[in-house]
Image (cartoon, rainbow, N blue to C red; front, side, top):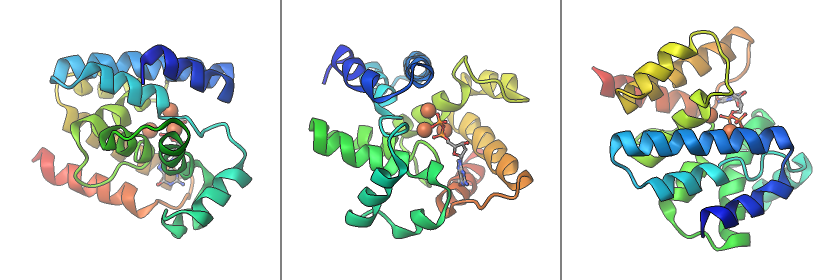
Amino acid sequence: MRVEQAKEIIKPLMTEKRFDHTLRVAETAVELASIFGENQARAELAALLHDYAKCMDLSLLKRWIETSNLPKDLLLHHHELWHGPVGALMIRQNHGINDTEILNAVHYHTTGRPHMSRLEMIIFLADYIEPGRNFPGLEEVREVAREDLVKGCWLASGRTIRYLMDKQSAIYPESFQAYNDLTLKIH
Ligand code: DGI
Ligand code: FE
Ligand code: FE
Ligand code: FE
């Protein structure tokens, strides 16, 4: 699939704000891919598709989880965690995306997971640092991200978990596993 085609596919599926966020994630992902020597076209495509299912009805996302091989414990956790795994299934089924690297980058972009590929880390991090985001301490993550992909992901993962714990949200096991794996790698 080409970049222009991906844009045409996602645009009608999302709000204007979500589409603009997606374009910024794509720009950021291309920049990170160029810094870290990854395929830029692949990074751009994965970024354009990462929030494919973000604006869909929760009842539809729920049905996909119930009727697919996705882990059922997703349904016990916050519905924000559903759009990545379901989006990956949808882009394969509806648009014939068969690139496993891209599918995994979409699937795991919200939680991360242990042993992420470089493309997975690029999408995970680009989503967090895209220029429209404005979390406290984000400037530090932006700087580190451009020097060290693993350390950037580690910072983003730790900050997300801390933020969720501060508001007494449950943490999905893969989010913790991603954090642990990244922590063991930065030392
Ligand atoms: O879809 P985006 O808003 O661009 O970003 P995202 O898919 O990375 O994250 C969506 C939300 O999910 C964000 O507010 C943080 C939250 N999140 C990430 N990991 C977990 C989580 N929420 C819960 N409850 N548990 C997690 O492990
Ligand atoms: Fe997302
Ligand atoms: Fe994210
Ligand atoms: Fe996103």
